[in-house]
Image 1 (tube, rainbow, N blue to C red):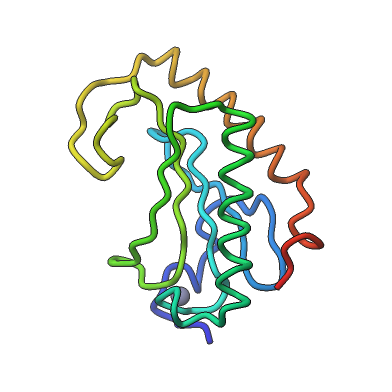
Image 2 (image 1 turned 90 degrees about the vertical axis):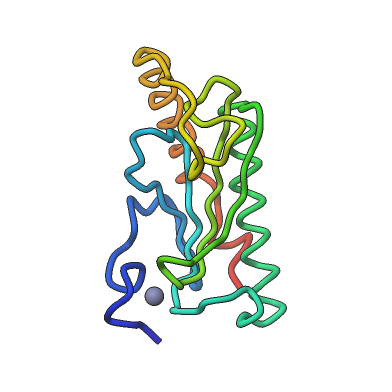
Length: 147
Ligand SMILES: [Zn+2]
């Protein structure tokens, strides 16, 4: 059940774009990373292997659907998928569009910053991210992937 000391139990973690009975898809406030989306399991669970096979499958189908929407709308150079939980041990996946000219490429976004992205380009990508968020809001996650 919910853990009162866990940030993802006590907060949404960002703007909720879509949700179903078991998970939520959020747009976190990440100014450097436009289009970064997180899929958060609602219950306080630490590892993928804590989930039933059915729930594992439902979670990964949603992660892959979000990845597809990012590709369709943003057409990035690469997508990074990550699940750590080292700081917040509550199961969540990061789905991160990457461009060769972003500030960290080819490092991970948690790696060494290699360059500054021009402000106008960053602004353009934030505007494109709004289209992505709208596509996620419009997608029927409830009936397609309700576990
Ligand atoms: Zn939690």
